[in-house]
Image (tube, rainbow, N blue to C red; front, top):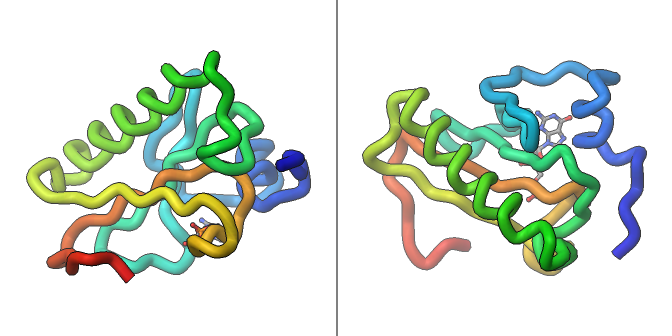
Length: 116
Ligand code: DGP
């Protein structure tokens, strides 16, 4: 899939629109979800232009791991290191609405299984 530079997370990365940022490093940015589904709901996004997780190329394998590592660090720093859930939606059919790869970090309430 082609990457669209006008998507809302690209605009957050360019600081064109505000976000409640909780983490930033050389490879990723994390900020609170506008429509939180749990007491802690953070989106971890790469700075690289990747529309969906399945669009990442082989050279970006380490970056994908970095996003998971950062999510775990954020959960711990936010006081939820013992229980959290990570979700990545790939494609509209799976619930993806913003086409810049993002990892949902959810914590602070019981999590049902299977997910909806
Ligand atoms: P998904 O459905 O997996 O593509 O998740 C997109 C998430 O992005 C959704 O939980 C709501 C969130 N979101 C959409 N627009 C904005 C925004 O402008 N700011 C922030 N912080 N979150 C947004």
